[in-house]
Length: 430
Image (cartoon, rainbow, N blue to C red; front, side, top):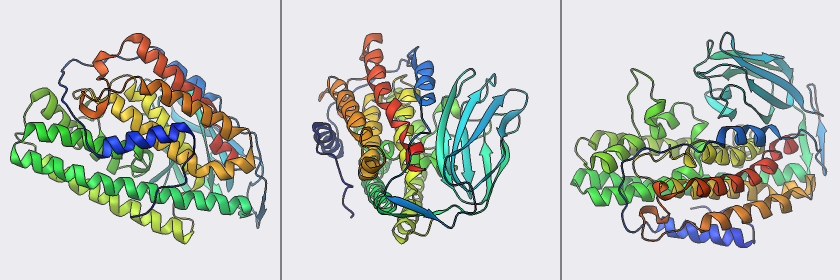
């Protein structure tokens, strides 16, 4: 078992660590509800505002680039316009290898809420919450080759995107720090997937035994390990939907599998009947996730260009907070168990750990960035701590007990972190 990545010494990390232990030890009490969640009205606009604030400013110090035949230096900017008539249109659709920032704007496509950059069955960068009228951005550093811009639900869902040349090799102290960050993050992901296997198998056994209460407990125990690394799982386009699709996202004719149909049966229908096949498949899919993340980890250690990339870690840190804003603060993720704040804390923990691995490199790039983001994380965790409830399933206040004022307070604290955090991918790709 690998060790956890470098962690911050701030009180926030100690608090998160305590939460991690609490979760890993399981939860106490029980909570049952069946009412559907309501959305926080300000979320979509707030997300767009925060992610649009990402800057392409900043340059790496302590490093040098060599052998460039592409577009290294200032990030190239690609504008992706999403319309109902034409789907996703990239301008330009061909760029030179190196840092690239994608600025995305959904003009009027009601059926499109996300855009992904895909290569060889992996998602290298993405943005969600792209409802009509809203925009967002993300940054990557990519080599020459054939890519796809994927906009699920668009008139044309997949659009070719070409990168020419070869990205400059980044060397020096900063390159070493970024490689170390990738290795540390790989270890963190490996740990979370390994920890996830045990409660998922407990869930499988409880269902096989017909033990509803044990199954509910195991469900809540498993969820945080997945939620901490969700951007990594999402980088495998077929696997995340098999594991974590919500009922509202199931396409007609598609089988609904993974955590949430099990959640619906356990907490709404209050039965384990008929869940054996779903539980067996969930275990198999998690084991496949362990295999794939293990391969990524090995490639990262080998530093062969096929493992975790620093910009992926940065985008993942920001993406985890997007997940909170998109589905946890709205109560959509855990519609039946109401343990949304347990997922909320796990997303924040995962984001914080991803950020922590990048701190040494970020200190070289922009000495003001780490203290700013660290303070905002501390503030967010302090706000979240007000909602701990040891008597509730998962250890947090059930979503249905949150007031509109509670949701706004949590959203405001999230957005305060999201704005500066969304800048770091652009900075480390320079």
